[in-house]
Amino acid sequence: MRHAYLYAVKTLIRRMKDKKGQTLVEYALILAFISVIAIAVLLTTGNKIKSVFTTINSQLSAAQSSH
Image 1 (tube, rainbow, N blue to C red):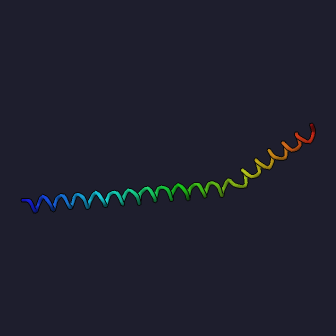
Image 2 (image 1 turned 180 degrees about the vertical axis):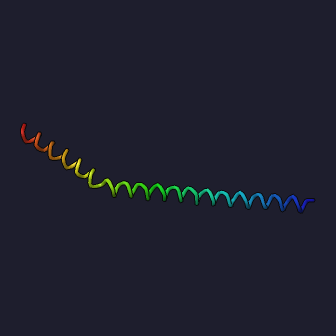
Image 3 (image 1 turned 90 degrees about the horizontal axis):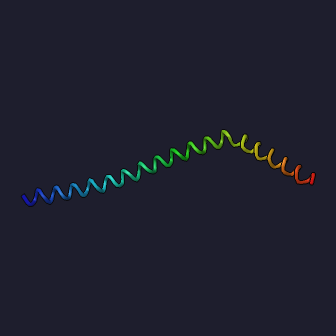
């Protein structure tokens, strides 16, 4: 009886440790997925964003030089 109890406790502890590692891997995979999506979005919209900021910068420069 005592042997079965100790075995059950050891098994439970092992499973708890495995789930912690599994959770860490899941979080790492989610973070990697979000990073890939963010990079893809920035690569596809990067030139458009650069164009908008260039336009803003040139208009601000023109407004500053006219004063």
